[in-house]
Length: 198
Image (tube, rainbow, N blue to C red; front, side, top):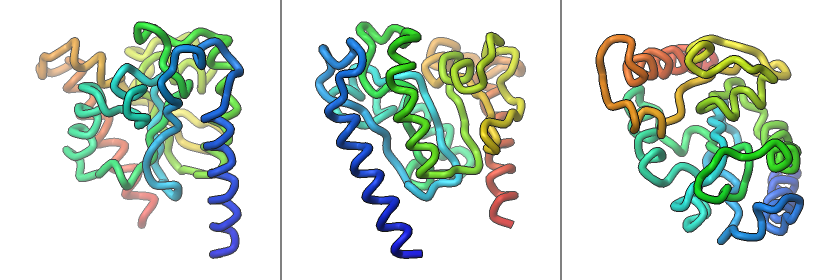
């Protein structure tokens, strides 16, 4: 097993270097640095967002701005710490003005995300918002219709959830609000995660 871990780590480092040098799409021209991902390489639970913002581009770490702090709080509410999971994005460079990544940008980066997921081999993927949900599940359904439901991707359970930045724009905690629904979703994710341990 240790030898297998060594091989995995070498492949991971090679992938990280490849992403750092990537010029496969125009996003590389304006980045400060790539944002590969962060967390436990043996995580059973992986969160996938759409792309880095200004803070992430500056620090090289995903979800470190206001939305990232909220994601950390959502995880903490069900006693999950960021170092127990892995967090990444569909694209590894910041789209200008924090716009949604374009199809050609996601196509250029897709192989990196798939390689990350293959190496981590999680049991659960949580897609945050419309972009990663629609990309991974190959659907046109909006996040409001399919959040909180379980899907399958290459044998891995997938749960779409609202992106934390959407929750920042919708502050209400009332029953049926995005924050209320996210609380339901993260509890269900925690329940599923616990069932993997038993």
